[in-house]
Picture: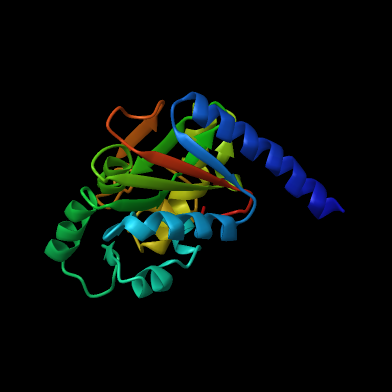
Length: 214
């Protein structure tokens, strides 16, 4: 019963977030589970030839790559092992003009704002301009009250484990706490807040009643 009540409570927050995103001009959809999100993305991918992946752990947890590959889609994944720096950059640039770009978001507010901090800008850049279609997947754990809480969440709960995952030589990758460092490998370099649907973009936000990413 307690798990059912927790899921019900999150459902209300997810649906409120969806309505706020719609008021801000985004296409937005509530997904009761990550499987619902997967089905939506597979359907949306039918008419796409090239599909970019923004390096999102949320999207990685959906395990879509093999199914999309079997659909004969070109997958643009800059995080594949063995790629040179130039090869990664070329894939990142191609993601900016792909047919479908898949990514998560570091946080979303109950007022329908998408908040992200990036290292290079390729992920956030593709989120708001370039690809023909963008799908942003948001786990319920990314919902926060306001922009201040979003930035705090990113610095406290998203950036340190991400830096650790990428084996960055930053203080947070060792301690788990942000110290607003000056490390050459600092990953918190570009902060983007998308308040409203950008004028030349086609963005759908899937708000999922599951914990996804970090």
